[in-house]
Length: 607
Image (cartoon, rainbow, N blue to C red; front, side, top):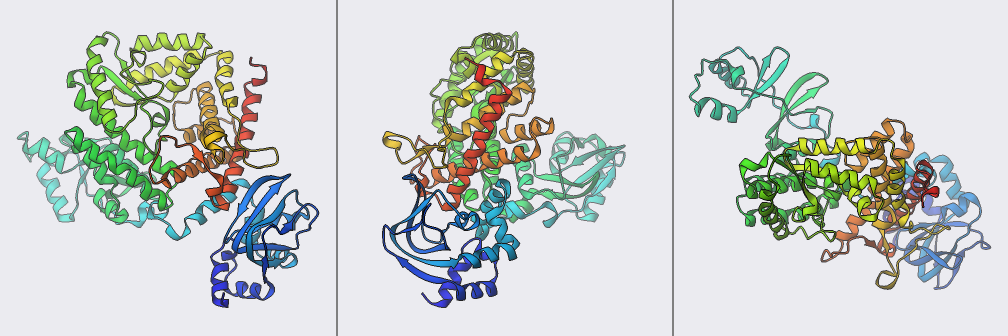
């Protein structure tokens, strides 16, 4: 390997890329290149570490008491902890002939002392470490979704007119300024007039252009702060189906953000999927839009977009799809007498790839329940054809158990609260995450309020509900290694049962206890922090751990040639060293959270 290649290799390895070219050149004069055959013991409890090893070629295994903890390959380094603390419980043994750099202990410790970013990498806290590692994983593919803000894109100047001004005079002012829309001031309220307003409320209705512009304006603007991320603007466009947003700075309107300008900036196909769903009139047209979602997820994930942002976008698109199917199937005259709800990950806004259907129907009291049956059967069939598999627990609108009037749901909630059996606890857990995607959302709101009221003083039910968190062991041994599965999953761990479920369900129960209406796990954590249940540090650690677990699971799924039904198993050996470290740290936070729940709900006393 030439000196140029050596330098390029070192500068491509984090955290050495933080040192700069001159310092790398200086380090190269102090490092040796060494060769070790298979089965050589490099570091052990009785073999003191004298160097930091940086692998050029080969594999090294780290074990504790014979149990495999880590596998190190090309461009990995080890073992900084042995050098910093002077001892180790681990044994590092060559598994495949090794060629490596050796950075002497004294040089390494001097670097820690002299270069703060280098020190931070090895000594930083959980949150900083996670955030920095995630950023580094995608540093060569930074995407405008993550770094661009609204004030970095072209904004159209607002054209303001008074509500009493005539339509023709307002249009003349709009033309003179070259504006796309008109903003209408009516005292302290601001409305907007677009091409749609002019077409539907003037041309098609025969209204006179001498009439006041305020009579045709739409009030209730969709706004976004100038300092906000463009990705959040994309979410608003997708959710509300609008073509422009009013940009604000504090309480002042500073411009108009057009959807076309945003899309040309991002150059992705999200808007095409949303538009395809809106325009669809047949099941085939919806299927075409649905197929594009997986491609979108792959694209955004590869560009480094955090999984929680991807899931928000996908959830908005799925909500549009549910709403469109609902409108295709349910007669217009009946649509306002019911609420189509989604539950599970879809209800929490955390769905990324298609999973089982988890849906139900709330019917207005007084409406005839039987009239909805054939339409719900049809809706279920449509969703199946769109690729939403049947729910293994039969939580679907086709099941009478999940199709009731408001009174029926209230009766069911009361039964859940009074009964401690497995079915009741499952029903409660599912319903707490419900979100309305079509019909009248007020029906769900009434049921949710009844649910919250039903839990007043019912700490016994809350404790039984929370105890389910302890049903699955965190796959981390006492000495910090991964605990793998059995049989066909002997080299894998279940990341959902081992970590994701504990955070989702534990936070869900705490949200129920404190009557938090948000269904998204991260939003719930933030609100629990706001009321003082968690301190800010622990809330941040939970969010980072949850985001890490979701990200690793998603990347594991997307790495498969064909996405299978089993989407929760991860093979640690196939992960990078950085991901393995992130996963271990996340499981530690999960264990801390379980201890918190045990203390908070007195789970040791629950039989």
